[in-house]
Length: 206
Image 1: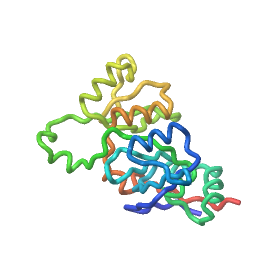
Image 2: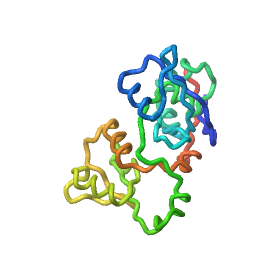
Image 3: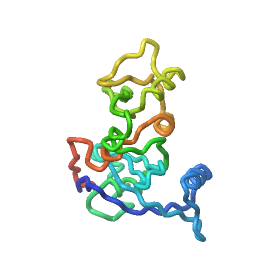
Image 4: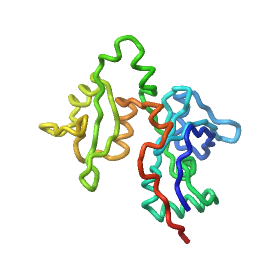
């Protein structure tokens, strides 16, 4: 069994047995349940995140290929769910996908060409992982960075990350998703190709 990335992969997911939160989120972005209580949504799948190409801001969060490559438990669960011999981001989303949203869904090159955007600052925000490495979590515009700073999302004294800034410790994944939705930029062309050098070849699991 191996993981592999499929470039520019678009497919439809059907959501049923919706929580009230997911139902409201889908409704907010223009989707309503059919007569069977299900909602079908087409996504473009990147590594760890998928987005709706129409720019509405709806996304799916799920583990990356590398994260799955490092977890036999996830490999078994995905294989049991899909009954397929290899794993692509779509398969991971089928099993683990969680609905979310982004405030911005943008192509960087198109954005630069609009007005004076080439002169605007963009900040990359990081968070320390369990191994103490800095993991990139979102980009934001200068105005959103100022709001994050004012709302206490950086440690006192604020350490600099690589080309960006380090978020304070203790933020949960759900809190990060909320920050991405409220402040973040989703550069859509960046999730159209595999973002990691290591694609993660998996050992066969029983």
